[in-house]
Image (tube, rainbow, N blue to C red; front, side, top):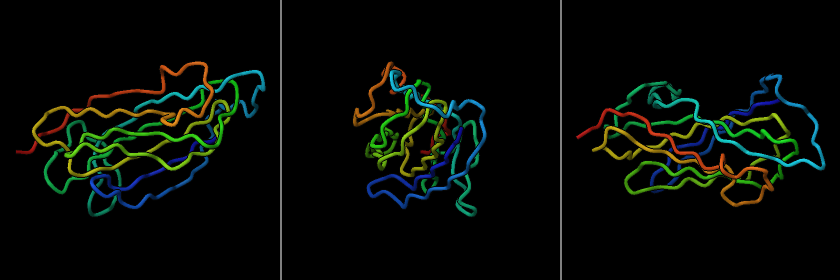
Length: 167
């Protein structure tokens, strides 16, 4: 099995640069084989929330990061193929980010995932909604509906995160 980590740049009115860091991580979950009679099944899992440190550009986990101006909040999530058949290699995901104005991040085309494989993503964004103590992020694993899946219900996942609201 393999896990890729994609880090995407700042999302507000104009998206920042996308950076990709691919690391093979043995998970033991990948079957490495695709059943031609099976079906793929993409599933979203939220992993962590926090911010990107301005000095080091590294992700920092936080239970309630500040929405102060200049802060880049960040969310980590994974998309896994928990089905029995390889996905197509033309799927995309979308992330609805809690920014002012509202912003929906559309990913580039993603690679095919074998059964048991997953990709981990980190999306950082500035211009977070400031006057709320909870922010909601929604990820849609197959926003262009190109993967024939046995279960679409686990594609669209919303998670609430606590923040320290800035005035």
